[in-house]
Amino acid sequence: MKLISLKSDYAFKELFSHENVRKQFLSDVLGIPLEHIKSAKLVNPHLWVRYRKQKQGILDVLMELNGDVVVDVEMQVRLLKHWIKRQLFYLAKMYTEELKRGEEYDKLRRCISIAVLDFDLMEGAEYHSVYYLRDRSGKNLTDLFQIHIIELGKELQGTKAVDDWIRLFNAKRGEELDMIMVKNDGLREAIEILKEMSLNKSLRYKYEMNLKLKRDRKAEDDYVRDCGKAEGKAEGKAEGKAEDIIQLLGELGPVPTELADKIMSEKNLDVLRVWLRAAARAESVQEFRKDCEV
Image (spheres, rainbow, N blue to C red):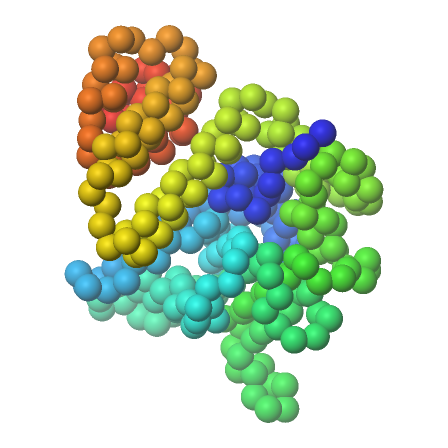
């Protein structure tokens, strides 16, 4: 059985929408006994902006661990320029965003960044690197900042709790899941969730559409960059996105003629992108119409 890749945004976020999976993953990566993790609550991944020109930060999965620790879990499949500076930028925003004017510094909470990378970033064979704020002798200054880097492409030693999670993220076929030595309920649930996502026709279709949306957006960006113009292709792109939206909605139920006509007549690509994302999330045609007011 071919599996949906957990390296995609959609599948990665879907996996971490399950609390038992979140708790077990944090336990295995951070080395915290599972019984000490009382909660791992999902929170808004959009980091706020104080000033109009300030850069927005949008995270993959943002959690509150036991109500007093903020944890960001990111999946990155390709190396970006200045990746380390980017990660530190997000960590700094996580740390400072909740402190309002006039509040004391004791309100600031511990922040942990966990980056799952599908490329080699650090030198050496170590595939789970952990970084703290320490002096030259190794004396810890504070535990308020912590960065974990997990590199999926390096050879596993087979002795760490995180190894089976790496095998899970790398799995492409069902047979590979059978080779994972399941030692706990959280990882067992993660495997079952991946199998269900891979078998569910609607979820697989949304996954494929998510990938298509990314490919389309990259193709548009490449066209604008290489050719310096998008005129002449805009109408064709709009029609293609409209057809994708209708096809997605058709998986949810009958699409009324007037709705299909309205979608096909829309030429604004930004509007169509919003509708396409809404169609991928919707549980019914009625929900889509309500969300998009069409």
